[in-house]
Length: 305
Length: 333
Image (cartoon, rainbow over the protein chains, first blue to last red):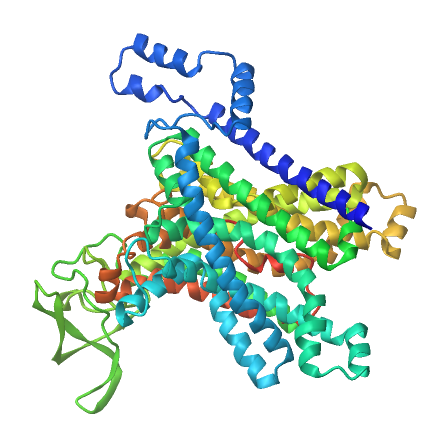
């Protein structure tokens, strides 16, 4: 039993590492494919070709691609992602600061979405028809508010009522904008999974043993339904980080998204790929956590794949 | 055809119609600037003039205070709406511009801009969708029909693309292109990106359907009749029609939001050919929003398209197609 769990964990960790490495390689290839390199902007701004060549030599850009790749991979192992051309600082340093901010925003949004979406789904699955219809309508509206629309709507609400702060650096508004549509997705999946679990034989057997309905809904059915719900988290995570780019720019939240957008505008390619890799790492870790939780809840998951 | 399927077709067809006909319905050009109409509020359509019923009309808008940007209705003279002369509805030019959704900072008609923007926003989403369908059906059918190692590799790459953070992928690729592009180049580039990031949703479902259908008797009959692998896959594909229809309506709002995000970030359509995302770029100042909430019209347009797509989805009680949890926006937002 514990052996198979260990094998499952190992497989998942290896898969996560492979994912990160693949993203890293693809990012590197894209930087190589892009026209020009980190020294081209020097030539454009009137520096002599000799000086630009010196910069290339210093950054190792005059070496063959295979050597550069080897050096870059070795750098990765030490968390060295190269040098930002616009900020003239190590990419790793800039990315680490943004990483913390984005992780903070994303985890707040994730916790909010879970705290709203999962209980709402359980309640709606067990509710009478009229309440279920009302709940369904609310989540339909929230589902139709992608983060970019939700941010603007919340901003309007905030300046009209003063319930939320629109100051830059305020966490509530961006976190809510990301969490509300996600809560609706979770509510959808949870209410369907809960309804299925309530119909299952295991719950019927528990009911026959005289276990009270409330306990059936919140303990027996919930435990069964969490497996498909956790399966959705992987997809939701990628959506969450993508959505946070626009939200970060709109609400001036100094995270990875804002950093990446600025880097694209200044054609700072090492910084862009650094941001992309950091986000890929976050997604891989979140997915790993969701898989491990799923395996802990349901032994069948461990056998699969 | 079932009612559920007809609803899906209505939504998809409506999006195509809006993209094609939207600009023709607009009363003004998207770049026409009207003097003394900066941040003019939406004009109201009335039916009663001094207590008596008339055909729909508006009152002339007059500037009361230029500094405070205050406008008022000149209730003395009703101005009748003319139908289908310039766009769907217009008024006599001597009476000033018709601004049913208000004006932006440069005194441009929001309604006309939203309708013209529909071409770019929905156009990009629909061409991207077509590309995603083409790739997804091909890969899915190939994986489902061959099985084994080919299937494993294809589905693994689909999962890989799904796990990528779409917005960052777009940013990396956008960083490689020249900063200034023509609107049509942007349309082509963005549709390619969308096709490249959305195909796995289609491929996974098609693979699952082809793989199950392959076990059924008609597939066996085709095999017995000597049909090759591709011929069989082609025979099985109609079974995926229902799934594809659902998927189209599911992905449409996702790609629409993707476009809005890219253009909002200033990496998509320029102001001269503004999409809904470009227009939102001008709206995201909280103080401005409080004074001129009609600047949110493009956000409302995105919301309405998404809502229509969500309502048209089959209810949860029906058996869901394989890719149901992708209900969130998979591509970028």
